Length: 198
Image (cartoon, rainbow, N blue to C red; front, side):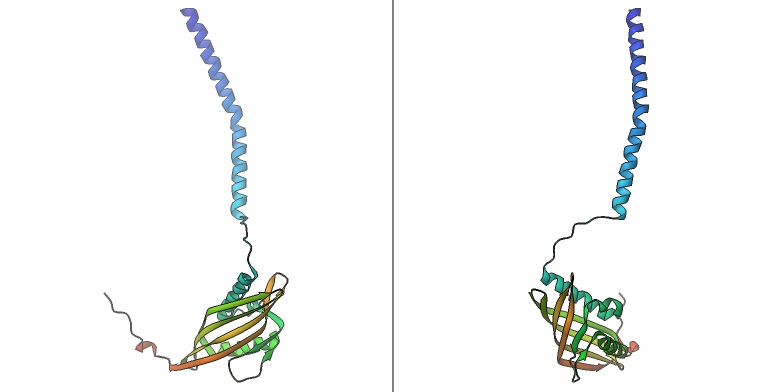
């Protein structure tokens, strides 16, 4: 029995020592794997690569119109510029000659924007047709703003002709017509009803 215990304890000690050496040897490998995983995770967090779904030409035109109108409302002329051709022709809803060229349109836009505060334009019922490198779009709009101390509201239609330039669509003709307009005195802020307290 003593021989068995001696033999058994020697085996247990040898197995324990082998296990300790195995754990010690595998720790650096495991640490390297963890470091690689952390590096990959850090890389994937800083620069995620998302697959882009293909967009149809009609969707690209619709997106370009929406972005253009967003920049138009914000007054961001630098961003607005990329949606207009150099030789754009713009026909407004008022009785005035067409505005031709980006520079002339920019002056007209800035003059209009200087006269209006809180301008808002909503687009609806958009119809888009694409043929090759040309597209036209038409939509209804509701424009509201405060001008000369009065609330003005215009409803109308806009028709756009766009051309493809590289991978984007730019407006080469913008024609708007006003179907009706409403002007009302702007209420004084003290006259605006405040919600009742519960």
